[in-house]
Image 1 (cartoon, rainbow, N blue to C red):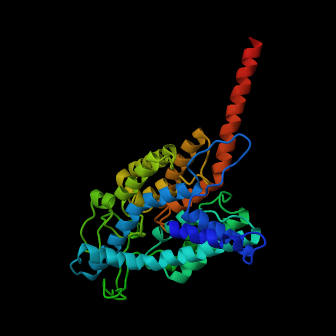
Image 2: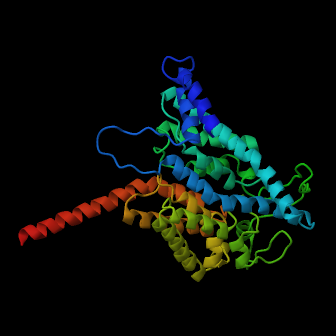
Length: 402
């Protein structure tokens, strides 16, 4: 690292004002701050010094995502072998297949997203922020594994430009960037984001995995629920019944990083221990989902097959847990007042289950619930603040009258 530091210091004058490459100073600053912690400090005024900056926070979130990422690699290969009806390969062969399957999507996401952010930073003459480091990993993890790369590129470009940069860049977006990408894909290319084929990798890669026939079908558990008539019996790709433990552990079809509630909770524990995520939001999302799932199950009807699922099944299936831990807790787009966080999270859980149960054309719900509450988060905070102000004014009036 010392050699790299010396190299960056050597080329730095060329990027400073008056240098040949001064037009690309923000690019240099971006790489420098990404590779090394800046050592510049303020020399006047009163400041609170903390070792935690945006880069450190983004790095900790990425670490929290690693259990879901590694499990997604294995599960991608596992579902491919299950769909082909052949015995699974060795652990490392399965991991290699999953890694090669997701790598192109991660590369495309970062190249497009970071490329646009670099371009905007150059245009504005600003420093490059680290906000997309997490979004660039979240996007591949919430999409089906067989999503075409050009669709990922288009959706990523749309979300970065129209949901982030036009509002000022990192810290100014009011919608979660990864979920905007997912929503764009869902509404622009619905055939590639739902159905009974896209959630299982269908091609062999460098001799690993299996080529699946065009007639292959393999819906996610929630997809099965949406298309069922009468009683709901969830099965895996080998037609074996799926237990609640299977749903919790995550060896089921689904978006790349969303299937394992166990890995998601491991990531949640890490985020809470490091102080990155807010426990009030996570707890209230699960509480809201549990309450609404209980109500729906209490008044279950064959008209809405999703109402026949129990509370545990709703909380473990789909992207509910992933959204509760990694999406709803985004500090930029979430509510910021203490009471507002409870309200914000609870409503996300409630709305996610309502959409999932009572809209049979859309078996998920967490994505739209988070995006909807992103819009209402400022209003929630405003109402909480106004209530507090009015309470204090009323208290002052009572004291003055006494």
